[in-house]
Amino acid sequence: MKLNSKGKTWAVIALALIGALIAWLVPGNAGKTQADLPKPAAAKRAAATAAQTPFDFYLMALTVHSAFCADGHSREAECRTTVQRPLVIHGLWPERNEPRTYPHDCPAPPLALDSALALELADFMPGMADGLHEHEWREHGGCSGLDDDEYFHQALELARGIDAALGARLATLAGEETTAAELREIADLFHPGLGATLTFHCRVLRDANSAQPHLIEVRQCVDNDGPGGAPRTPLDCAAVKRRDQGCGQHFRIAGMR
Image (cartoon, rainbow, N blue to C red):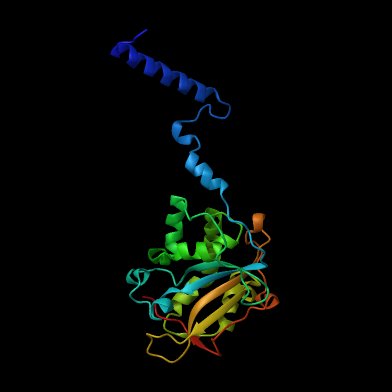
C-alpha cells in the first residue's frame, strides 16, 4: 500500500511518538529531559581512564607567577595578561621515593576537560593559554590512574589550600626578602604541620636586576592514599627525600606583575 505525502508525514510523527514513549518507560529515564540523558561521547570518555603506573606519592607544584615571567618568559601568552594571585598551578606530579625516577609520558586518553572545570582551572593555571594543561596531562597526569577531570580537580583543590596558607603573605612580600623558615611559620599558623609538607625552590632570574635568588616554586608532598590513588594526606617532605633547592639563607619574592 502506498502512502501519500500527508500519510507519510503522519507515519513519521507516529514513529517519533512511539520512540519517545519507549524512552520514557525505560527504568531510570522517567522525569528526565533529553538533555538529562547520558550522551554516548561523554559516557565513552567517562569510562576511559589512564592506566596507573606504580608511584609512591605526589608533588603538587605551584609556580610564583611573577618570577616565572621574569625568568625569560615575558613573551608567553600567560605573561601578557594580569594574574591576580602570586601562586599558580604548574602541575601535580606522581613521584617515586627515589628522586629523579618519576614515571612520565604514560599512555592515557586525550585530554577533554569538563567545560566548567576548565573555567575554574584557568583562574589558577594561566599557563593554559600556552597549553600547559595539555603538557601536564601528557607527561604526568596519564601516570596517575585518575581520569583527566579528577586529576585536575585534585590539583585545583591542593592549589587552593596552599594559596590560602601562603598567597596573602607572598603578595605582601613582593619585592622583599624572606626565608624558608618564615614561610613555613606562616604555613604552620594556617594549619599546624603544614610547613614541613612544603619545599621551596629558588634561582637567579634571567630578567631580574639582581643576582639574588628568587622564589620560583613551592611544592607540597602528598600521599597517594586517596580513592583510586588520588592525593589525600600531606607528607613530611623530608621523609620522602625532598628538600629546598637553591634558596640559601635568604631569597627574594618577585614583584607582582
